[in-house]
Length: 147
Image 1 (cartoon, one colour):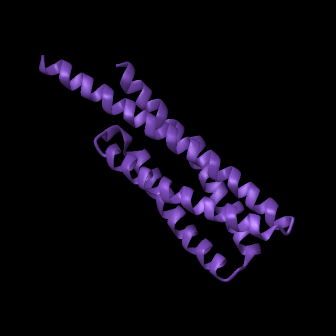
Image 2 (tube, rainbow, N blue to C red):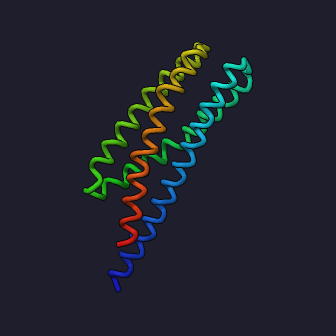
Image 3 (cartoon, rainbow, N blue to C red):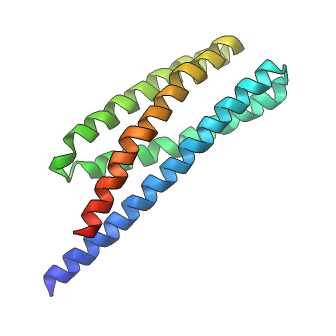
């Protein structure tokens, strides 16, 4: 009887884990779209629209980062995921370092630097992390559920 409880709780935990991955994936899609929208508004000199979009991106990051930390902390239970934990750490450090630069650029009203940081630092980082690390994690979690 005890084994069933463990299996059920593991399946439940993994289903929550998969849901968290899917929320992160959607959040990244929205963030990447907002970067494109922000750059478009700046290029069209629609500064109020750009500011509103930037505000939305910051709110999205405020929701994204705690979920990222939560997922990473749960990965430590799986010794087979050590490489993914390193990828999570590198991504988290990269995002936080770039976020500092972005906030300074925003504070200085340097829209050109802001566009460049978003497009060439954040977008590239989020895009590659989503396509590589997040997908590996998703498939690993599915493999655990199938066992």
